[in-house]
Image 1 (cartoon, helix red, strand yellow):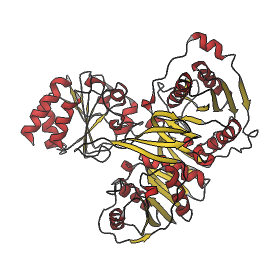
Image 2: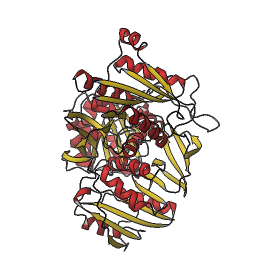
Image 3: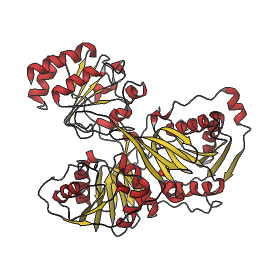
Image 4: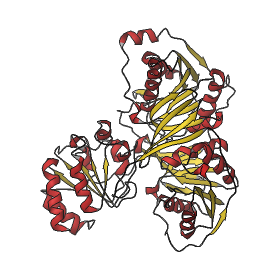
Amino acid sequence: MKVLVAVKRVIDYNVKVRVKPDNTGVDLANVKMAMNPFCEIAVEEAVRLKEKGVASEIVVVSIGPKASQEQIRTALALGADRGIHIETDEEVQSLEAAKLLKAVVEKEEPKLVILGKQSIDSDNNQTGQMLAALTGMGQGTFASEVAVDGDKVNVTREVDGGLMTVALNLPAVVTTDLRLNEPRYASLPNIMKAKKKPLESVSPADLGVEVAARLSTLKVEAPAARQAGIKVADVAELVDKLKNEAKVI
Amino acid sequence: MSILVIAEHDNSSLKQATLNVVAAAKAIGGDIDVLVAGENVGAIAEAAAKAEGVNKVLVADNAVYGHFLAENLSELVAEVGKGYSHILTSAGTTGKDFMPRVAALLDVAQVSDIIRVESEDTFVRPIYAGNAIATVKASDSIKVVTVRPTGFDPVAAEGGSASVEQLDVVKDAGLSAFVSEEKAESDRPDLASAGIVISGGRGMQNGDNFKMLEQVADQLGAAVGASRAAVDAGFVPNDMQVGQTGKIVAPQLYIAVGISGAIQHLAGMSDSKVIVAINKDEEAPIFQVADYGLVADLFEAVPQLEEELKKAL
């Protein structure tokens, strides 16, 4: 079966994020960019499904500026077969991203679509669920285990207070949580091979989707800093302070 | 304006987060109705009707909503919610699961995880793991919003007298089915709403050592949490994770043990009233946010803490 994986180019998770002095956003100039960590887990899961013989082809799709092709190449180096780049320099919000992905789903007809549960820039946690709604598919969000079984997929989900397993009819959408797998690193030969894998570029207009922002960001500020308190000498002083000064125990 | 709040519950009791979401709805202003969807939820509807500021409680009581499957719940909420100006729910794993589906069905944007209301269409929310705070204006006719409970003080659980109305709307999308669940059994309070939380990090070295924290937690009536590093290392399950990718907590007292204080973790607990850090590395960033810092080996300090608490409490 064919698996579609969506990946996003975001600020590298090791980079210290700085708010621009004019409060219009976060400073992305000359900042290292990378594949969103939850998307790496999505790619890894697809590759494992292929290694198990469950998936026959992995198509990876990314939405964003020209440079997003780097992340598609990374996914190809990790084991995806073919890339689709939806090129736009506009800000694409979750609903529009879901509409663009829906157009790709209609064309490619994958049995399974795997996305990260959220991107570490906007932290929205929306696109997978919206795509599932727009395409009329079931969804297994925050997945820690994915098991394809005939025309169904069982997804174990990380929920408040524990785990919950659902059975979804295929085709279905899965969004990944941290413990689903541990992504591999791309080997040098695979990075070289990835450069020759097919990568198609399309525009939102080609897919018949108008990218229009529904939410406008009025300002972006740095969070209020918390003041460091005092160091205590030992446990006895700590307990005394908590009881008699802070009065929290 | 009219606001529909989707109650968070587990078919046995109303979660406190619902009261925080009603508080967010009050900050927006307008009539507040609460939708309780689930199975055998009569008592929960009664509880919701007593919450301060609630106008009407709508009840969708059917087995198809029993496990909060997003496919079914979203169709219900989209149908009931389309007559409202705002649809709100808690940003717990249930709300995060079904709410974007509601927004897509209504063809509107969603504003996720708000911590403040500026006006009826403008909200404040953290982005980049809490490293930046964005003020966002929504232009759609229906505002679909998830609320971070710790951003709002809960309304009173008692004192209201809303009417209760049964809905006869049964939506079974036929796309998904519940298979099983594994709930972490614990006598300790729920991490998200506990008054005191004690969390361990990579410094705990293994899962067995978390028993030390559990003993302290039991003395304090506290919940036990963990940093992402401890979860990634396999010490404890992910539902104990405090941080941007786990639970967001804001207890009266937060005790961080063997946690270095990565920004990811701070994003999940820095709104706590009092923060205590125990770490042997005096340069650990956790000390920059701690009200009381103790530079010590946790394997000596935690048993001592248990002893001192025995004397003090």
